[in-house]
Amino acid sequence: MLNIALFGPPCAGKGTQAKKIVEKYNLVHLSTGDMIRKEISEGTKLGQMAQGIINRGEFLSDEFVVKMIKNSISNSKEVNGFLFDGFPRTVVQAEMLDEMLETEGQLLKALFCIEVPFENLKSRMLERAKTEGRADDNETAIEQRFREYKSKTIPVANYYKEKGMHVNIPGNHPVDEVFSSISDVLETMI
Image (tube, rainbow, N blue to C red):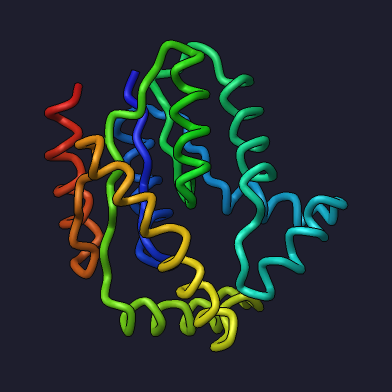
């Protein structure tokens, strides 16, 4: 099975690359962002709770996110693998993911880290706020999200670097060029 994770700061292009990877390699796309936005758009109790946390620029709890992922893995049988998008965001989540996959006799093959300079990311997010009407893409929330990313998420990259599973991908290039860089590495794993 080909199990990989896409990693990087908000608006680095993870969602765009995920669509291309899923299409080419026939993986199940597990996007915590999509799962949460679905809950919010459906107005569920879970969605309402998540909306308040997100609007403050904070991350949802590890337990909340891991439960969503675990349910999705359990409900996906006979697949080529999983593409984790926006997960894991903390070392605790990474450890929980490793444990979940081991229970299923699987491993995470690689963590692809898409890197983009902060100023470019901020510009992308502010533009996204205009085009998509994203209330969570405001100056205050953006700054908070990047503080959270630096303090909680960057250690995840280090966790996978220590395991020899971290792949750095320059993300400030055209979409197809970024995808080609990812594909080159994936082809060596198949």
